[in-house]
Image (cartoon, rainbow, N blue to C red; front, side, top):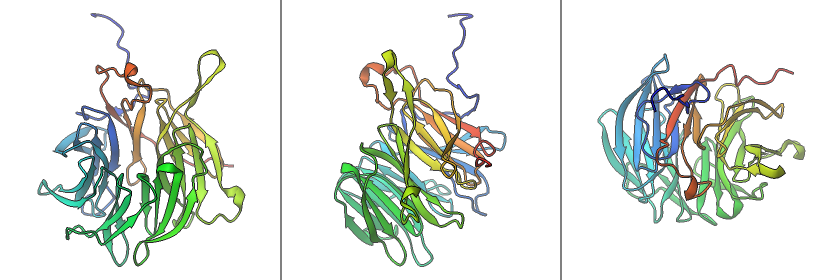
Amino acid sequence: MFGAAQTTTNRMNDFEVASPPDDSITALKFSPSTLQVPKNFLIAGSWDNSVRCWEVEQNGATVPKSMKTMGGPVLDVCWSDDGTKVFMASCDKQVKLWDLASDQVMQVAAHDGPVKTCHMVKGPNYTCLMTGSWDKTLKFWDTRTPNPMMAINLPERCYCADVDYPMAVVGTAGRGLIIYSLENSPTEYKRQESPLKYQHRTISIFKDKKKTPTGYALGSIEGRVAIQYVNPVNPKDNFTFKCHRSTGTSGFQDIYAVNDIAFHPVHGTLVTVGSDGTFSFWDKDARTKLKSSEAMDQSITKCGFNANGQIFAYAVGYDWSKGHEYFNPAKKPQIFLRSCYDELKPRVN
């Protein structure tokens, strides 16, 4: 015990967030850049039913600010567009609004099953909250009234979603993908079957050079990502690539799930994180990998960039991808922050 070499779990020498949740992290979001809230705040939702908020200081230090508890595991979180409120979606079939200034919480949405996704829709003529559930519905809420503005039946349970006005995309069980146009009011634009053969876990919208949402990256449990344009100029613009795989024993390849994908807000490059415990930075236009991390001693379950793209956050914890025999209660979840702006610059041809 004494004098034994300390094996660090901080494999990339990044800043570790103080007082992380007690169970694996399901959601990780930085505050939007607003004049009212010039600071960086980070929120994390967890299987321990909690949503925690930290202030991230310029030197990388994190100050725990507050915590709220839901009636079940938290599956998603999102910020209001002005950065003053947080929405929390839970297995208790509710979404609650947390007003950070008053520290008050109120219910703003409900489903008949666990709520898997919540996203803020900010259009020029309306603002609402979009929630997707395992009850096979997608609902849009004006958070001041108890009933949804609109409810859309999905073909299957909602597994992942993303919103970047005027586009929304929802991935369902059974490998379904539905793209919605949000202009004026949400309407279905196009249905697609997943280009990936296995269950998808995460989806993230990307923009073109004019900053218009133009496509999405989709990650599956089989170590693969698809880059899909909504209206490809050339069919060859759509492609898939393998990731989060490693050479296993006796010549077999170990294939891990892609747990999260995020696009850099300035460079348009992307990061993937996986159950192999690594993150990788990619340039989709040059179709090249920019960087891979060392493997952490547990899966990376979630990630995200802050509003100006200087900070990359990633959450390390067990996701049960190797079953109960690999669960070690002594290994606690961790959140790390990395200075990332230069590492995500696109490849110069």
